[in-house]
Length: 64
Length: 271
Image 1 (cartoon, rainbow over the protein chains, first blue to last red):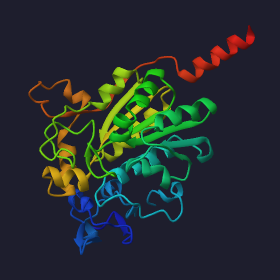
Image 2 (image 1 turned 90 degrees about the vertical axis):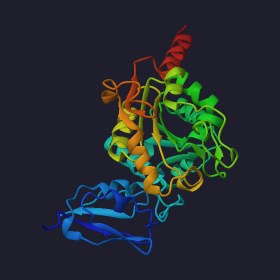
Image 3 (image 1 turned 45 degrees about the horizontal axis):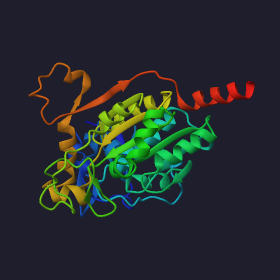
Image 4 (image 1 turned 120 degrees about the vertical axis):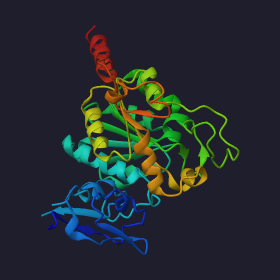
């Protein structure tokens, strides 16, 4: 399955709360030393849940 | 393209000061999207707040903003609206600021039905000042000033607003991110006092004292307690035990304060 969106992470803004990791329905994101990273980009279905629930303006979902 | 939040935020203000996992950022995003949907112009919008974590919001938003005394957001916002009735006035603040310290101003703004939108972020605690219990801390819960459990019953802020006379009252949670902007849009479009209570999480001063192991636990709690009003109509009182109704809770039409005041001026000047 190919990715439906490209997820941009602004690491300087991420505070590592892991809300995005928990509520991603396809487990695209993962925590890495208290900062989120894209671990499984191909599984992204562009649902935008991570961007909507990121309290720190650190995630941008660019639909492809 | 991803949604551009930064066009509504003052340059260089991010990252914000809120703690990791604090839902205030989610609510601010919802507020930005809502103001964008309503097509509000920066020069014709005033955002007013008091003191507290949630009241930091105007510091980030690139609109006309007013950061006022503790609990006095509704009072200052009333002044702005009376002086410039054509302006869209939005208040934001927390439960401690809006409904405890500023409870008096809040209920009288509701009673007058002045045309403003009050975004009330209820995180059950005074977060910024050190986790003291507020008027909406649930009974039995722990705060820095109630180390053996809060003896007081909590305010239901939406019911308080309805009882005080607000003509649009809605509730949602920080978990329900898309509902936040939908309800704020309805509130901004409503002519009269609109109160949108948003249940929020405070992992730092509320969560860690009340056995929430993580931010995610607090978000899951918000997800679990929320029941839409339409679904609640089909549920029994036992099923609704411990739940909170979300959605539009109250809507009515009543004369708006600024218009009433303008009519009095016209009548007296004409006489």
